[in-house]
Amino acid sequence: MPQQRIAYIDFMKCLCIMLIVMYHIDHEFFNYLAPNLNDALQAFRLPMYYFISGIFFKLYSGFADFMRRKVNNILVPFVFFVVLAYGVQLLEYGVRYLIGAQSIDINPIKLIEPFYLRYWQVTTPLWFLLSLFWVNALFYVLHNWIKPVWGLILATVAISVAGYHLGINKVQLPLMFDTSLVALPYFVLGWGMKRLGALTPSRYDKWGIVALVAVAIPIYYLSDFMNLHFQVLPAYWKLYLLPIVAILALFWACKPLPRVPVLCHYGRYSLIILGTHTVIFHPIRSWLILRGGMEPGIAMTLIVFALTMLIMWPVISLLKTYAPRFTAQEPFFKPGWAIR
Image 1 (tube, one colour):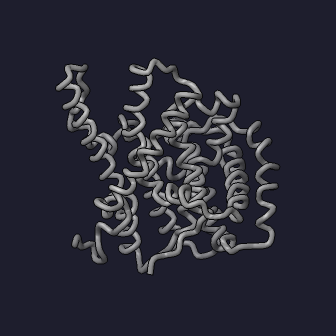
Image 2: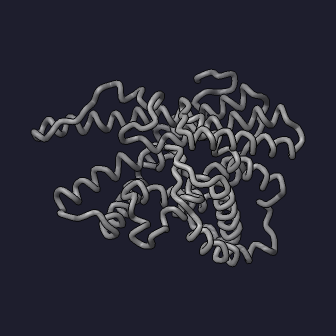
Image 3: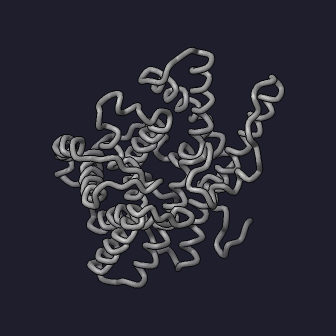
């Protein structure tokens, strides 16, 4: 029997992925609205995804079964979206050749760049999937080795301190493992909230919006620039205290919200949006600049965002229908790691 969706979790995922898409369209967009808004939003934009993943952490039937599921849900989509983006580039190369436009680089090495580079063209946002995979695996090991909850918390803090020092000293580990060390506390927070029963409706949920408003101003003024991808980190307490406060307040505020089908749909399939939004908005933005004569700014970003999300609806439908095993809708590897 399929697991029942939690509407406010899908809404939170929708909010995060939409903020991510807008940020990728124009890194300065939020700062057009308010000088420190982008830094404030970064306090929870990606940390909340780790938090939500932690909420749904399960041991399953053992390490092999756990890893099989994480390979199915994280690594298989990672590889698929890398290959898909390369296929789109091949198509672009062909179109440019036919119309006599400037050529682009289609070296096949692009297919393996994501496995050894920190930055690669077009599909850069997929770094998050590599990091999320390691966070899941790391917490599984910790959960099995350390039984007391206080021991898990201490181990998580120690690992985050180690990751933080790697980051501020510009020491980068392969496959985003250094980022995973820093992100582990956000994941553990989600696991802990579920363990405490926070997902259960409460009469206090109506006060969540009050809490969100109360913390919004200090988070706005105290937040510094943070980039988990490149390990550009603020002070240690800002790296964790501000995101934790923001995540908990937003989680609390979202709990009583009604289900909004369109937003929940985008949230449910946020993985597909993460994997495809760059190959959709890049040509739209380029056309508006080169052919439409638009300048980067609020208006252009909103137009590109609206068109991207409109196109995303049929893209989601196509991929979940015709590529369900590559987009975490169905398992790629069946139990026993069999491909059937």
